[in-house]
Length: 125
Image (cartoon, rainbow, N blue to C red):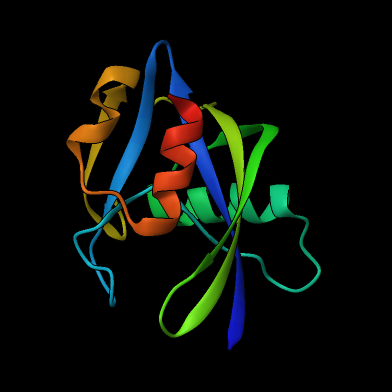
C-alpha cells in the first residue's frame, strides 16, 4: 500500500479552530484541517507555509507539532503531521475548498470530519 505524507494546520484564533470542507477528489465535502503533501527537499513546516499560501492565500506562523496521525484509507496509508498555527494575515480566500468555518472547541463535532482528522479533533477536545 502506498504511503502519502502530508502536513495539516490547526489554525487557532482566540477560542476557535479553522476547519475547511474539501471541494474536490474522493473525499469531497468531508471536513479537514487545511494542508497538503510535503514536496521533496521541504521540511514539514516549509510545506505547511506553502500549502496554506496556495490553498487559502494566507500567511501562517507554524507552532508546535500537536500529533502525527497514521491512518489506513482503503487505497493508501496516510501519515499526517499536525501543527498548531496562527494567522499572520487576517484574510483567507478559499482556493480549493468549498466552505470553511471557525469552530469553538464545543462545536468541533458539528462538522463531518474525514476519518484521519477525527483523531486530531479528539486530541484538541
